[in-house]
Length: 269
Image (cartoon, rainbow, N blue to C red; front, side, top):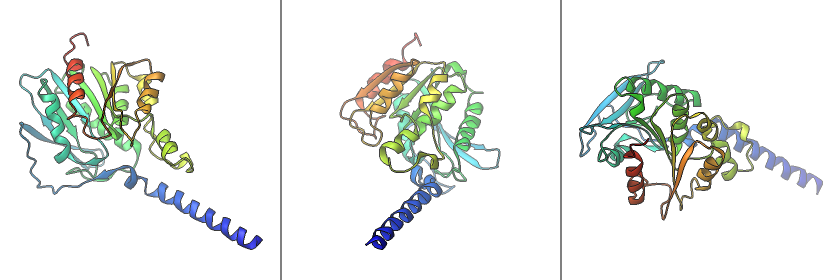
């Protein structure tokens, strides 16, 4: 009987170690779900746009799209979620161009036409910072609105904390990825997570107005994450909870469009 019990626990331990190993070595494939595009792929949108390419310090090409509004009140620098690519995320630009803002959207490494693959958190930050610094040469920074959706919220809040944009808008943000991991997989040790993406820490270093949007029906990142961020960071200007909205489709949501119009057109900001 003792041998059976010992064998059982041995198997459990082996499986647990195997699970942790898989989560550690393959976490990029779990967190990031890119869809690649052929380098010759032609984007098609109803509104005018420019395709932009940027070369990283290690020689990889990053691809982005710049949508223009004439006349322009400024720029929305948009960091999208963890799935898809610019062919699907580009449609989000219309929400902001109709309000008179240019929109720049970046595909991370391995997404769409962007080369390479995501290997660590600092690489994500460095890539976004490189592109932001280049785009910033075309726009006064006090006219740039950094926006991040879901996984992009951590990159967006880091950028806002290390720069001086007009404002920061986070859509369906997490508190941090350690917190998310504890919610989804409380049995897994958090030290194996290479991507912390600490919104809670970055927001405290921001010097601009911060607006949080979250769907009340979001089951992927519950809206309580935004409530925690608002509670702990006195720099958060407003948290807006959207009725009957899950994790996806925020840019097309009528309540979001109404609220973002008020914020972007507020001349006091």
